[in-house]
Amino acid sequence: MRSIYDEGPFTPCPDPFNFTAHVLGRAADLPDKIALAVLGPAPAERWSYARLGRAVRGTGTGLLQAGLKPGDVVLMRLGNTVEFPIAYLGAMAVGCVPVPSSSQLTAREVAAMIDTLKPAAILRGDGIACPDAPGVPVIGQDDLAAMRDLAPCDYEMGDPDRLAYVIFTSGTSGQPRAVCHAHRAIWARQMMHEGWYGLGEGDRLCHAGAFNWTYTLGTGLMDPWSVGATALIPEPGTAPGMIPLLLRRHDATIFAAAPGVYRKILSQNAKLDLPRLRHGLSAGEKLSEAIREAWNAATGTMLYEAFGMSECSTFISASPTCPARPGTLGRPQEGRRVAIVDEAGEPVPLGEDGTIAVSRRDPGLMLGYLGAEEETAARFRGEWFLTGDHGAMGEDFQIEYHARVDDMMNAGGYRVSPLEVEAAFHDFPGLSEIGVTDVEVKADARVIAAFYTSEAPLDADALAAYAKERLARYKQPRLFVHVDALPRNPNGKLQRQALKQLYEAQHGQA
Image (cartoon, rainbow, N blue to C red; front, side, top):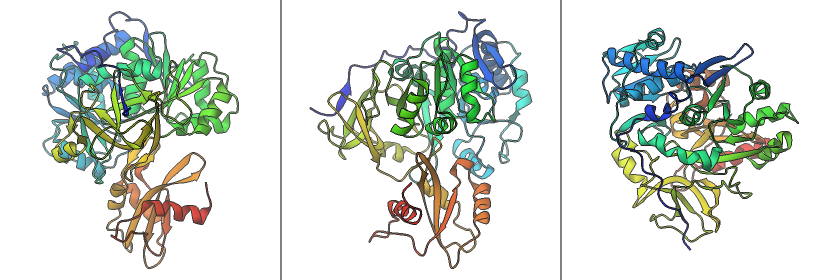
């Protein structure tokens, strides 16, 4: 048998359709229910569904009054505040195309995004890095807040395949790529509700991430709101050690985080009393069996992992109704068509290694990379979109994860290209060559390390300061290692696996 999972297509997306109208579809039925609570030591900041709906649709009206129109691209340079999801939904409500971005990005990185996007406006929060962009209007945080009280906009309904939003992801070329998604992408996320979350209207889902992280936007906010559940978000700066107290105090039923957050919580707690918690969700990077087992022992609940990417969100996962077989990621969510394919794009026999691939028919699959038609085409083989990750499918359709076929790194749930990091150091004084990879510094903890050549070891603090000026914090190397020469193959290609081995030889196995 061939390695294909297909139990039939997902229910077609309605036409006409609007992303925001779908997310807030339960707001009229549940006006007084808490849609969002921002958790901290002080009493929680609470948003009812009625208040949230008014704020979102008022923001849509304000954006139109500011001169924006359907189809206009809007770059979001906002901080970790509730303004982020309100502006995100408000833009799509009126047919504008928001582009969420990490507040950690430097002005230099944002300048490259502006050059790619040619935005019609920039939404900018106080203190958030952003270069001057002549001719591009800037809407500030205070102006956005004032828009909440305007009359509600009408939803701009239309073709579910039209462009809804754009997110940036690290490209294998070293240049971040702008991933274009359609309004139908939110409709496709319903496959996760049973295939991963076990999510219902009565849930109180707490996500440990920031408002302006796409993992939080989707799993922590959009999905709970689309079913009428309550989203719980710890306030900015909350230490991981405080999260169990917040989970217990606010009766969280589902908890979502990246593996690193679970590791930090478990390092401080051998036992956790969370009587209302049913289970936890993990995504962003590979979850280790050690963390999974430790969470189960500490809480008596399971951790369900999901696998995905910016181009299709998550599509393989474990769930309460279908736990993962040990050593696997889980199985494709019902409604997906997923295969393990060879280099020609042909599905391999069950049990054999190949590239994990998603069918073009998937309603959650991207429209393409903005301004990069050749790179978009290169990711397809016939019917299949190639993820770049290798795995094998068993007879039960559960998928073992093997490795990536490229050198992409994972830093706290963000995928980072080593080429982008290396390029940031090209003119550092005295540096001859540099090679970047991620290394395991202790069990379940990886950091980005930069190996470089120079006549003499360079000042590590100066290298770190240089990185800080040019790269978002999650892209900055945490280690700088002076070497006599970078390992290369006979064709001159840098061997990043050899860099990992070099670090292990110098520091011992993690």
